[in-house]
Image (cartoon, rainbow, N blue to C red; front, side, top):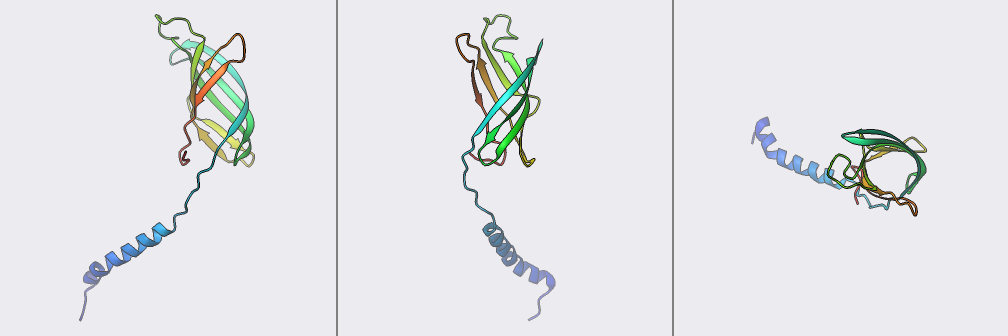
Length: 145
């Protein structure tokens, strides 16, 4: 029996494609979740603009330690707004909201690798003790929680 090339391709294509899919799915590595902790000691310089979108812009530099990364350094800029800063009817507030702006924080490891993260949060100024900072840092793309 004689087959044309086209007929042979129609006959064998599903078998070849199926075997490629089976091989490809078997070669993906599995990733185990890792706990990640980051501690930074930072210095911050704030420039007050008094105008939207950022009442103030804070520039941060930091050094610290992160699990699975070791010693790290970091740099970032924040957009800082007093709660109610651009709302003339709002009461005065001792609280500020901040977000990484215009881009993410850059965390650099000792060997030069970099991780980029965004963040947001609020700072409550307290006269009788240390100020309180609470924030939210979603995992960088490619990382799972």
